[in-house]
Amino acid sequence: MRVRTVFGVLRLSAAALCLISLIHRMAWGLASHSIGSQNFFAYLTNQSNIAFVILLSIGGVIALRRPRDPRWLTVTLALVLTWTITAGLVFAILVWQAGIRGIRIDVPWSDQVLHFWLPACTVAAWALAPGHRSVPWRVIPATLIYPLVYGVFTMIRGPLIGWYPYYFLDLRQVSGPAEFVASTAIALASFVVVATALVLISRMPLPRRSFAGHERSTPIRRQRVGAQT
Image 1 (cartoon, helix red, strand yellow):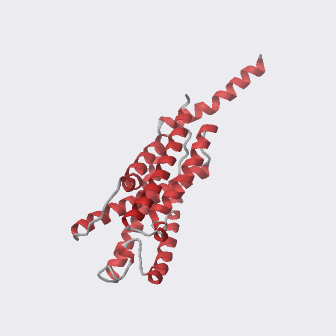
Image 2: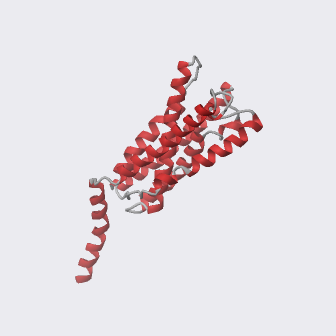
Image 3: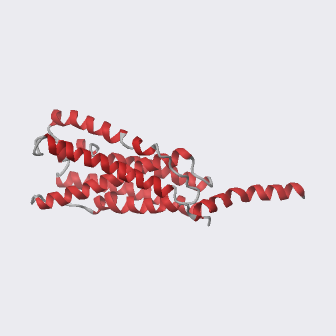
């Protein structure tokens, strides 16, 4: 079995696991009354993981059919990975701060998969996947577009329904504008740091690049031999 085929199967499996985790998280939230169905899709984590499912499904099919990923897939996957990884980091900080404040936050297995295990495994597979292209530097500022739009939309929606997906976006739950600005700045800086790390990883000279080149050149070499005979 070709290495690209293995990675294609792994991507499709990861997409299925992500979808199952999203369904479980929604069902768990409804059963425990910790979140209403109307607010489930308001979390950045859930939005980015829905995009993750779609992108991994497309990437899995491409890996099964083509020796290299198209440039747009590599760039888009870097963007989505940045959002999911950063959401996981923010979630970990929120759980830690909740413990300090004496606030109980239950973390089901689906949250652990969505926030920690799946992004970590996907980054490892993404970095080592044969046929993977390097990510351009312009991806770093581009990763901020979605979080900024999300933040503005949340700040408009929050007062209308009296609910915010993340406490630091609610001015009633922070000490003042200074904490709000600081928390927002740290969150945006986290997106930049994660995106920068992914760009650097994609540009590392790994053996997978020579493997991908070998896979591309092999059919051409055979075609020339056939033409000569």
